[in-house]
Image (cartoon, rainbow, N blue to C red; front, side):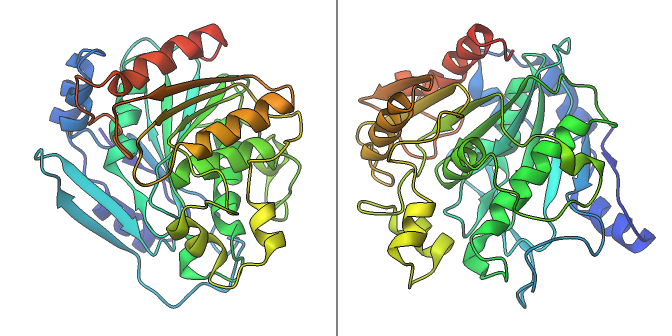
Length: 338
């Protein structure tokens, strides 16, 4: 059964409940799905077991809040699979999926993509969480604020949300996980946000609110799918415009680019990218690989001749790239993150 925990009024609790109906039949299908049948996790209808507001009432940083209304664009893709995305996020949330196999104590924070102007819910999000659950790994999907909406906090708002999410996961309370085995997964712009978590480890982006905010934000490992890496030459235009605006300075672009030498603090990284990606060029992956190696960091890079941007678990089964979850599984096992 889905549980929704809310801070604040009964009105807020009812609003959250309306966003997240319990689907018992979906949970049963998630438990029965074979880890090798990746599309089964995309077809599944299981919703989160728990949804938490990221920030206490009145404590969210990054104000002023833009004048806008949060909405969910609920569509079906060409394969008949549900494809929801959130727009104009004003109330960031952390959605918890409990393991459907014997819990291992490991967990993962999932940051779906969307070019910093939207954020995915199903593809790269809920479906991926269900797959990790089948491996015994607790999964958390973050619905983060979007810099494209021009918050007072500017480019920082998404990172503020990601840092807060990592701290809440490690704080526990409503779940039991090993705080030393928390990975992050990000795709496209979500991959850029995941890299930011790995690199901007010492950036305190908001004031301490509670005890959780004294915990570390650095992930113990990172899985990056076709990530945006650079905001400089060769940047993904849409992500750069959304993150930094139309008048970004060279200094702003450099501050959010990870294609040069990095500090030697990054966790182990798994990187997967299609050579012919038509959205984010493979040059981004190559640049990140060079930067991490130049800093003495650990990175496994997998490049694929066939593949697609944003495939999630919905890639053509004949593509080797579509098997990235099993590559990630073996990588997690090797690094003690499974």
